Length: 297
Image (cartoon, rainbow, N blue to C red):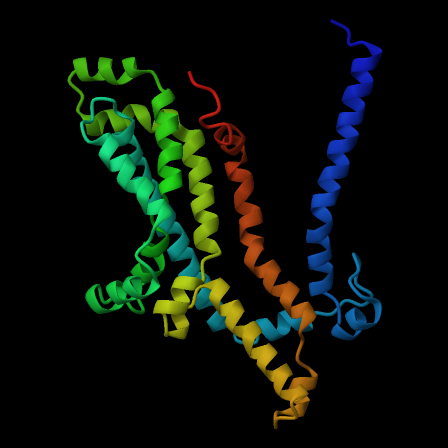
């Protein structure tokens, strides 16, 4: 059926609005890239610009001046993100599957217990004592993975998705002799790609941006995750700058050539760059996963 003039006008305006909105989202990223490639003097003189006045790789040269440190940081972040995301999906999906089964006798009690942990926590000091004095996880990848491993909200989100799947699937599989593990692996998980991809992406971003566990439990520099390493580098720059302002004795030649604003933006590029390449692989399922729980089937 041919669209009316009003409908065509509406669709045209909608497309124009979405294009402008997309450009508005892209402008900050373009600005970050431009500032990271600019000279600090140009930034002080002209301010933030979408195109650099002069191309300058000083910030990246400073960051890559110790390439082994950066490579170790990427290695720690990749191990933490990959292993943590996989283990999180296994733990969250198994817990959510058990809570979604109506014939599970203790699902109400466990649901209340999990919800209670969303309201109250044991506190930082008991958590630190548990991780260091009882589990002895200092300077291990487990110390970076375990604190972010579980998320009760994601458990409830995935449970809602599992509850929307027809009960007849599990019942027919049970009649055919399949156990709970076989039903979970062969039937439930293949039908749950949207929610698995959505939660997996969220957990991946959480691990990739995680730095607080490293602050608490990691003292070996070759195990610093990327976000924590960049934060330490930025703190060092701020400390040198503060010492210059307070007339503390520092290497004036090195301090004068030390990048500040452009380095901050270069750190942002190094931190968000890999995730920009990962997101398109999840996009197909991400849009479906956003509507999890919105329609009761």
